[in-house]
Amino acid sequence: MITIEYSDLELLIVRIRETSGFDFSGYARPSLLRRASRYLTNKSLDLSGLLFHIEQGGKEVYDLIQELTVNYSEMFRDPDFFIALRSEVFSYLESYPAIRVWVAGCASGEEAFSMAVLLREAGFSDKSLIYATDLNNKVLSAAREGVFTLSNVKTFSENYLLAAGRYSFSDYYHVAYDKAFISPELRKNIVFSLHDLTGDGVFNEFQLVSCRNVMIYFTVEQRQRVFRLLYNSLSIFGFLCLGKRETLRYSGVEENFRIIDKKLNIYQKIK
Amino acid sequence: MKSASDASLRLVLIGGSSGSFTIFEDILKMLTGPLSFSMIFVLHRGKKSSASLPDLFKSKTQVPMKEPYHLEPIETNHIYFAFPDYHLLIGPDRHFYYDCSGKDFFSRPSIDATFISAAVSGIPVKAAMLFSGSSADGASGMKLLEEKGFPTYVQDPAFAESRRMPDEALAICDRHQVLRKKNYLKEINDILFY
Image (cartoon, rainbow over all chains, first blue to last red):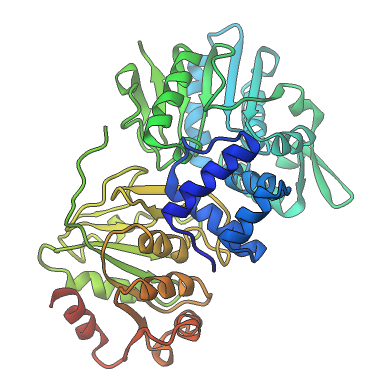
């Protein structure tokens, strides 16, 4: 196992910025340090080797950015969250003529597909549109394809059952060549596009924003800026969903939300 | 901004997997008075394990127990447990950080993730201990802690319910102190309180 120190990490952040323009200065250091160390370990490289490759203009810097920005996800992650969403949020959404949902930091699309299933089962598919964004082009193209391994789908099916899905999860994909393809019916309600939460601005107004386990990757200062962006992107009485171990503490917008579900981190914008 | 953190903070790190649960219970039972350190347990758990460890263990000790939130300050006289399906990291600013990157040895939370983050955090580690388990997780973290000059203790593999975890730790670093079976709880008590 290769482990770098925080001083090495700062040097790496500078080198990445100089070479690729990608700026990690707003990212939480403990998580970056873990990911950079994992990258080095997996590639059997030491820090000076990596810095040398980066300075030579090698493709390593893009591999590394990929490793540092990709988030693990799965469909219906935290099934109890989806149950709460259905019971505590959807009754509000019902009253809207059109529902816009933003999945911010969507990775390979798992959360967006889950939302699409949920909206569909609630009878909202004709009046809802999901915008799913990520800063990573590679994961976005994977999301657009909507292809998963069969072992992924096994996990998704189990989660779907626990999330009290109404039908059979197999209704939402078909299998070919040992892969599972998410049904086009689900995909047509989702727009996947590139958006960097740390640099890009408001692009629409949403009734529901899901940004689960994304904010944990930002520094406290950057996190406040992103919270402001999410706040500005929500309509009044719109809902904000965060990951299970996150809170609105130190967000700078705590006062503008009421808690809908404390355990599952669902909030409503009230002013 | 973030709440003031405790400059005198010292950590005690405890890691384990299969066969460690009852050891954790025994350790918790020893913690009768206020602690001069913060204790962090990393126990491998499935993501579906919904039981809260602080609830499960609440009859064992009076010391406050928590599954911390992201950015929660690490406090003396508190016991913390890693939450299922996340890595629990210790920040140099004496706050907890979460991470959802890949698993180590098929585990999230991983012991290495927490132990390595503690080793590089600059926060003094009073003791790190590794117990029974059936993977190599924890070995790298223990080695780094030892190299940083912190006291590290490994359960005697001969008496571990699953010996792989302590075996792997000793295989890559033979300078860990081995907790012998006989009276090992007394040994732990001495490490923590003297």
